[in-house]
Length: 146
Image 1 (cartoon, rainbow, N blue to C red):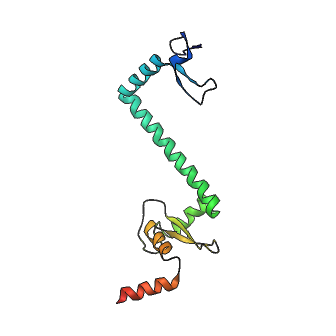
Image 2: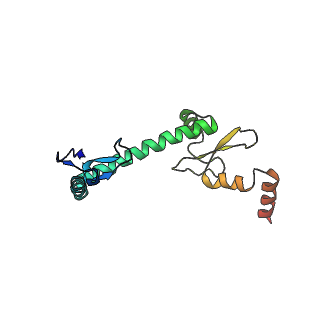
Image 3: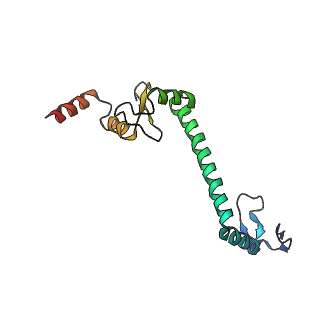
């Protein structure tokens, strides 16, 4: 038996939705109260708008913290070092010189791990497809000249 926090009625556990995050394994509110709350919230435009704003803020902050962790663990870069590299190139890809409004990829030598610069997705993939091999790139240039 459990008491619903909304209607304050003691009910059996089967009258509550499951919730693995709670110690007792069931939701705080009984099924009728939970459904009524969800219906009200879904039909209230202000509540819906606030929920979307909260979610966007959460996702933005999460994205930045994951990015910060990724730069540090993968390349040993702090966000400040990345921003410094980004501003030195004026937010442009080092190869195609196009300004991108998304994060540029950190290009590095796969043998030494040395960071070479920031590249857009396309240029970074192109180098990867050429296996960072200068001979392949020179042959490609020669091919394009024909």
